[in-house]
Length: 381
Image (tube, rainbow, N blue to C red; front, side, top):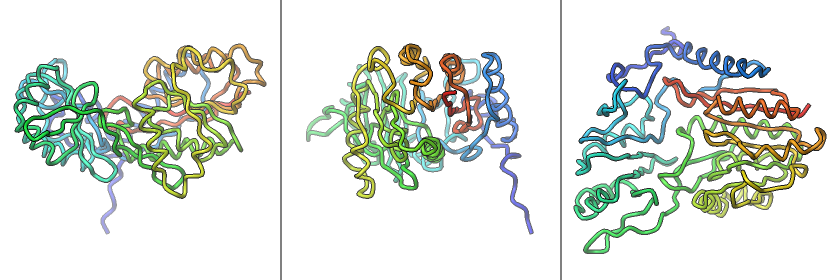
């Protein structure tokens, strides 16, 4: 009987390994990659004198996970930057892409663009729907609208968004016009065992992988369920990817977000929740505005904080904690980040505020690369 190969010993094959900069660990068996990331995170914590529990690693696989990826277009080449150069490597295949996204890339490459330089996001949704975001200069956008042929062909196979404002091209009978952004189901989160469609734009920020995101959602729900009837405040809810898993096990959630388009997506998601989850909507409140500068006088009305901040970290969001007595601070803090350096700086502040790390998990949603997602559960001493 033939034995099943151990995925930890797996080496992915890629014809662009020597030239493309997208993957840094293709030469390394997958198990060694995970050990490398685990060791790197431990070193980052050690440099900040942060004590931590054993670092757990969760993975959805050694490759082929991404359901969205941003490609660069340069002189007819569509791909990623080469190693040590500003030139684009023209990619026909990619070890990062899910089978559905690889199929979409192959189909998309038949289009020839009269554009010298630009950025293109390809995405597939939970049901395999295909989307593309064309982020070009205004002069190139006009050129494509006037040319018409490319857009006609593209709209036959995919949903199209154009420019920083995520406009949607519509044929009027004689020309293309750009209309306002349109919300569709481009991602998916989980409330317990129930999948939830997330309404957003092709250009919206989401996690890169549907499969890996299920692991993240499950971890959030699991941690919050440890604190019975908890009242949670979330920093940067976005389209609700972590909000809804938190809502599944919290007594209430206050979701704070500054981006209006993301909140429009979250509100539509709430309107379209499955019937079995409709009773959860009343547990959620939304705060619109720049919560980093001012939101509350303190955090005393919450039992837990959930944060997935940008690269810059939490910044002034933590300041109100300093003014509270230890027993008045929220009991727990869940921190998620793909920027471990800024995360570690924030964890030092939380340590000084009386929090200690109880669990730490790496979700490897960027296999074959140096990047990784970190989730940490901290509790008030």
